[in-house]
Image (cartoon, rainbow, N blue to C red):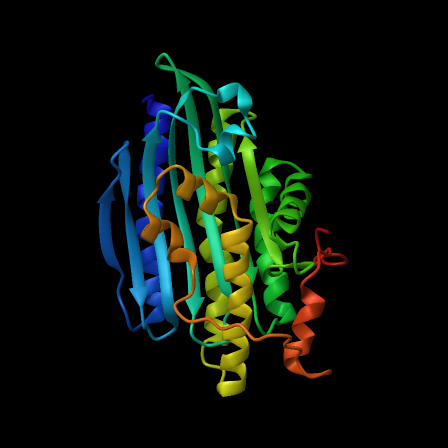
Amino acid sequence: MSPDFDSVRDYLVALQERICGAIEGADGGARFASDRWTREEGGGGCTRILRDGGVFEQAGVGFSDVSGTTLPPSASAARPELAGASWRAVGVSLVLHPRNPHVPTTHANVRHFRAMRDGQTVAWWFGGGFDLTPFYPVDDDVLHWHRTARALCQPFGAERYAAHKRWCDEYFVLRHRNETRGIGGLFFDDLHTGFDDDFAYLRAVGDGFLDAYLPIVARRKDIAYGDRERQFQLYRRGRYVEFNLVHDRGTLFGLQSGGRTESILMSLPPLVRWEYGYQPPAGSAEARLQDYLRPRDWLAGTPGA
């Protein structure tokens, strides 16, 4: 592949290492195990999993560099002009499931895709983003999350944050529940305005994730909780599972392209529950969450808004 593709791959390999080191430092009790794998059709990756830590019940940070000769249906339907093209995709994806219900679950992903025909690149794009899924939301955390997102977007134009925040709101929606998965963040796909600028933005998102998330972990990890909060967390994790299995394009692409199932489904929480017809008591801390599960301009009226 071209040096451009290799430079993206090198960045992502290093990003996985940096994020795993930072999460181990924040957890303080467990280390990541590495599971290296290869894919029969082409490529492979390294899935790193941390279990039963001091903060994180399960944390998965995966790197993949995979290729194929035929686009899966989830991709070819959106880009029919690429039918018959070979492809290569490289990315880092993570999902962190803390044990303490006061620490939000989070997801981040940064990726690069190339389609080729007769050895020549016929299409390329970047994608990625990060989003936050609190169970007991705190306004200061929400503001910090979105201020960090806005700040990393600013070098790329005045409209970047608003556009990719809106894209996140529109993507991470459980349509069958009429609610968002969480309080949003950034999401972008098919970004191909110019390689250097787009790659710089990918790096800003990848590097900015830890700045957005770790301060929230530090503020919430030692808050006391009981069985009520734990059971609500497990119930709300069910919504996370529903989104990933019903709506998530990355999950569908991975499974349809013959990807490694264990690595694709590392995003799912280790424990989860469903309860028929559950409604939190009116006025409770649990009922309060519902007010946060709809798109809004979190930074309206704050500096820089």
